[in-house]
Image 1: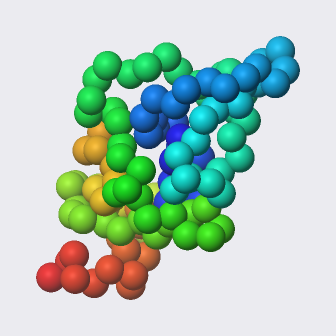
Image 2: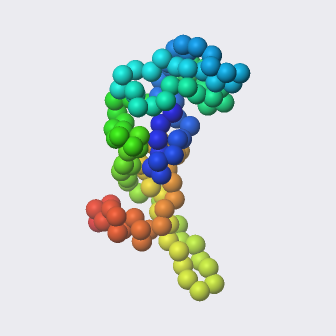
Length: 124
């Protein structure tokens, strides 16, 4: 699992880890590498998955820079699309952002004004 741009867990598989022991009816303790020592090693079976054969779904732990709070700053790479939603009195413009550690399918829609303020270099 990895941490998303809002600091929450997102269903993305890092790599296979060996199960050390079963700690409850639905919980397992995994053998974690030293670089993930801050992550609690016990996981519920619902978030575990059998070994993934599709290599595009696996993210290397080294590519994600996790800080002490077990989160990281997500950086946008590009704007994929733009959409204007018309309401009664105003128009809301959204842009589809591609983030650094996400695939194109996982791009998110964000408010254009907010993205212009945070990342003006993408709108030049």
